[in-house]
Length: 288
Image (cartoon, rainbow, N blue to C red; front, side):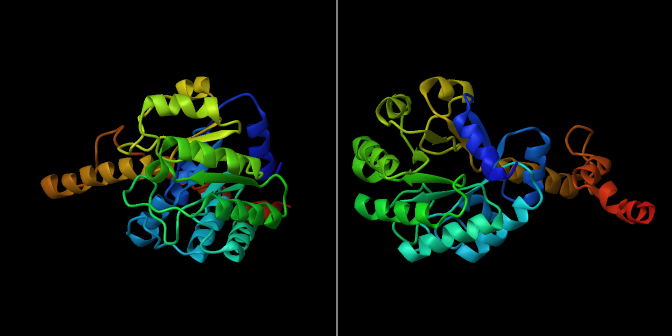
């Protein structure tokens, strides 16, 4: 089954969908190997990994589509990718959806910030009129080739118009045909509880460690009524901590061989990357 079909089946099923952000393909391979249902390719992690820059609009459409392509070809689970604002006006939204779909994404997030955007948990965000975002969503829905390709409509209105404005926008975006609605950066548990009661469409929620939103478990969020739970940047956070520890070992001890359990083995990494399959290609062809 195509990954778009896999994602659509998950959306139509009873269980909460767990998605962990992967800032590179290696991380995505680890996520798939652990048995998670989907992987999220976000703008924050991609900007940090590819450019060493913060998520304030540096990543271009071509760079993001290339990141999608590299990831989607090496994992068999759905990749849901960050499409930012659609990288411009309505015609840019059309191109974004088509580029992501061709690259192998199973779904795309589109948001109602102005261009250039910034991370949803940064201050100083600005948003476009709700009616303009509705047009963007109509353009996105018309642009997709595979009807199972998922369109997630994100609103950053909580920081600008308050929770009431954000809920109103989410309902408008769902009514326009978005498959999933996403209110970015609720600021309390009460708001997290309120959103599923007042938004009548499938909901995605972002659990960003250190951000504006309280962190709840997947089980709690499922009971509240959320369908899709994303932990978007945590792979980047733990990688930073692990690398600091590794660097510290080299500086203090003059060697990097950390104790067993604090680093994967060389054999585990070779297996994860599929080295035996690659090396076995010649033998299989000669025997075939």
